[in-house]
Image (cartoon, rainbow, N blue to C red; front, side, top):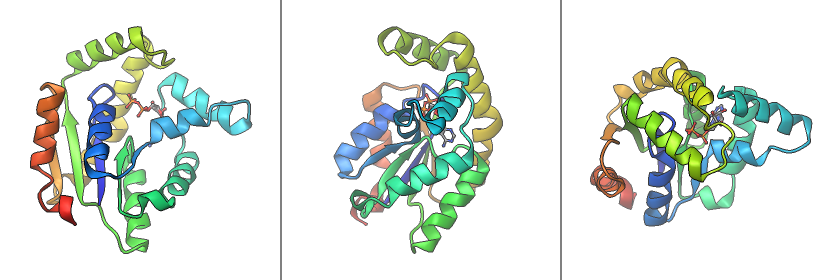
Length: 190
Ligand code: ADP
């Protein structure tokens, strides 16, 4: 079972993915985390850090190999939750191709929908407890802008498919999780 979470920064993708991963017993793959793990003194590490710190998307030809290497890990054999991927239409097409080559397909695409003011409030609150370099007011604005320009078209890419669901992300984490579970239906046993 492969489930994609799409939502702007601060929508709660990480929180919900962690809960759902534990519930389903499949790994939670966050491309943000995978990319943050590459931050080091290497050329690649510095390149990736430059994009993250500016709130811009890392290039597809950098993200793709990192993600597919992780996807080919044995623990993804029964599926996984994708958090932060795909983030543009090209990535969505590449994901479809990657799965089709393996006789797989997406089971569910969940759009976590949250209003802009609430997102900014949550991210600034998170900035006080976590030390993420990209949780400053300027970079948050940039990331929201990138979401609207590059990731929102991915929603249109999936919208007409029957496994696309919009989740009201303005509710409490427990309520959001229940709403997600209510859409699992057959996916949970496939
Ligand atoms: P958030 O959803 O709060 O922005 P993430 O941890 O998902 O946080 O992403 C942090 C940063 O990592 C992004 O701003 C971007 O620079 C990079 N990133 C994550 N996923 C991708 C992706 N699929 N393609 C390109 N860059 C990505």
